[in-house]
Length: 384
Image: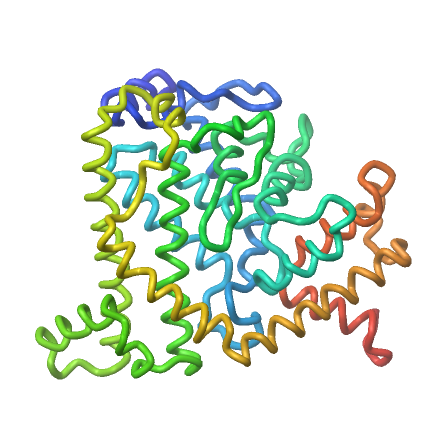
């Protein structure tokens, strides 16, 4: 049977010197004995997958509100896609795949219902009480709000996974500084991989969902070089392919070309730096994992297109505005009379304050649960 000694020997043999090895973890807040046949990061991954917060991602939105259709990405499908892309990149770069996967699976645990509009609403409501940031909320979830173990609160994850949650950054994600998690150092290379895997996933899958919804049309994409280059290649190879299959092939190819570029560019940077340990990577003044300049230039118009044509589409704005209204009205109702909260939730009020408890409660809701709560509290004919 594989044991801890063999796991550590295997990591030393196969991982690059700049990879974060489980043997070098800074450990957990509450000390635990090592598992007999799982590394620390494998154990973290499993704890995340079995958490209530992870399951709730199934009914939390990416762009489209949950009831708009079953096809569209949810936070759960997005998270799985990020983990798959990140695992591929980490494996090729000889980074720690288990740590990468754990961070990827945890990176959206702090998200509210109704996508970024829910977060914006809670941040406004909590402006005088510490605000709201989904990275910080993700850490709060795994450190405190999850209740699964008798010996400690939260999931008691390793330092490196917790660091990966708060230092996660992208166009929609702002890294936050926590004193105990080395705020002035670069995140691990595994965290950096997750950051860009997240961008690759939501850019291309939001494009897919936007086309499926009809909010954007293929003719709108004709001015995007990254789309046209792949579209022409596919047209030459598959002259008679139907529209739906062609769309899938283009999206798949878009992901592939970006992942390939990222790996090649990062590998070139690593060869130049000749890093001898993960600590050297953390002490750098810039991130190592990155696209080439050419790919960055190709991606920029695509991201601007999605912002203008999809995220700012009037139907998406309507959904977002409506969602903010739901969140704000629910928040006020609970704050005015917190006795309406579940009994177990009320118990935290004396320690955390009513607004933070209400914020936690709403942030943990799925889209459909928030809508059901709204009906129960505001529809006079709805049973409570």
